[in-house]
Image 1 (cartoon, one colour):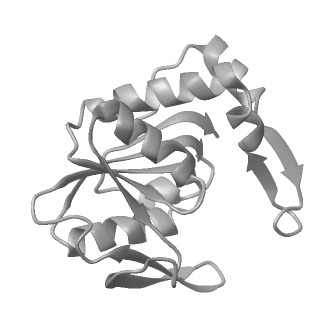
Image 2: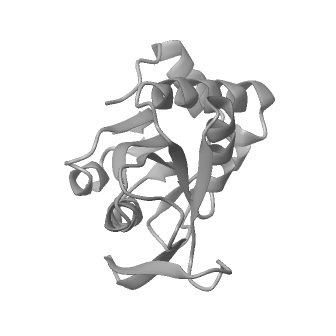
Image 3: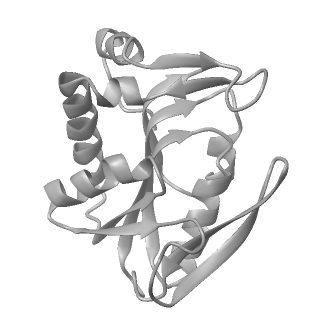
Length: 181
């Protein structure tokens, strides 16, 4: 689902996002959300709206994907009165980890989570800043599920609807605030 924002609010939020051409490689237009996050009113609006969407899932924890998911997920968890679980790049977690290697467009990557971060039956909402191809989010869902958790929702501030990210999450309840189609 795309959250029901008024056209005015969507236009306003999009005006806070900076486009950076040819990053990280030629032909890509990077959506830089740091300019949205630095605007107190826009950042609060995003956090408030995403928190209310997450509330409907009644999660036990909010998981955030490194790195920009860490900007949103802990605050949402705090506002809901639930825990926060980080999903990290390799070698960043100090305790025993479960890891998952997954395929990217041009190679492989790996994500890790503490082996005891979630347990059987925990309801988890996974949060990241932007949904593009969906590879990392889908791998994060698989990793959480492998620990016995139930991923009840997956949320993003921004979705690049012209990319197949949502298809990789077809079995999940996905929400986003802003969709670039």
